[in-house]
Image (cartoon, rainbow, N blue to C red; front, side):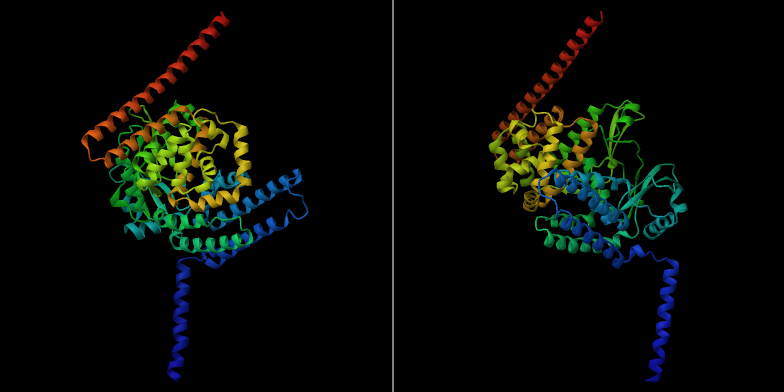
Length: 519
């Protein structure tokens, strides 16, 4: 018995020494401790909740003072949330970036504050990067690369990218996952779920559980870089006919779940008008090609890149051909649309473009919106109900309409949350994608252009014709479908030609008038 008791302190000494050596080799960062991360998130949630509960006690609802105070509370709450995301990093920044894209749902104070998280992503040290590469590829940097830039080309919430040169002289981009993200992500999502349930209990109208469900499903996919490599090859094959699109080639021998090595590509961000002007790139052409690319993904293939923020979509003039290219990066998150969902989505957009209100109701209901179909149409198009009724392809977007949409988003928040909990999960990522694309179009000042609706219509026609052919067993019927498709596409091309001629004639008339006046 005494011998056993003597063994206890000996074992304890060995364990303490081992743990001491572990922390000596891997310095303890208190930010990695789940308790610290949970405590920080819980404290921020409590402060924000208390602010909303107490700020409006002595202010009458609906007065100017009330709305001014509400804007201030939104702003300081958004700043607290931003600071929490920056402190906890990783999954928190990823979810914060998603919230920053929800222009149709969150007040402007939140979206404008959280959008800066795209430029506030953390950076791993060079020592951490080397350790991940050594663990995953089994070799030192010098054995794999002639040179490896220590300064990252870009850092995101889950990884950072370094420029390197292989021994055969090819320049590559090496995407390396932040070493702690994999371990922390599931715990972080659990923390978010617990805290959101608490907030929902305090504020029943606050129903953002769908956001946690999406994070649970998508985060493991985004953390698997081999999955990202497969996605990039798949989209490159599906859109190979789009000559303006460039997807970097993957180097599979230097890629793992945490390291992705690909062809190096550089250019300006897709929303950088100054870069385009300096390099002679046509802004309208870029906007049109971006819309064409995403219409093909959504309506034809049902395979959609769901993170088109400006850092993931670059533009450049090809050094060899001098043609303008769109470079698509970060293929970690794709949405695969179910055929039935995709066809109903096609028909809904056709109804919206052609001002077919019966079709808008029918296909909105088929997509799960129910009696909230008017709200669904507004959320999907980011247009007012008046513009939807008048025809989104006919009515230009105005500042007053944008203000109306934001005001209504705040007023109808419970109904919007109800809607987002009703629709299929794949719709949520499409809504996020739509918002990111609209943000790019707004910056380029090409929003709601006729070319975007023409490209969407063209893809919808092709998708529906392909679907009908697949359902038909009669060769004669398939031929009829093909001829009808060709006729509709020809009619659309004639309309596009008419718009171009109309613009050209008006331009020539304007120039002639100006020359006559100057003369």
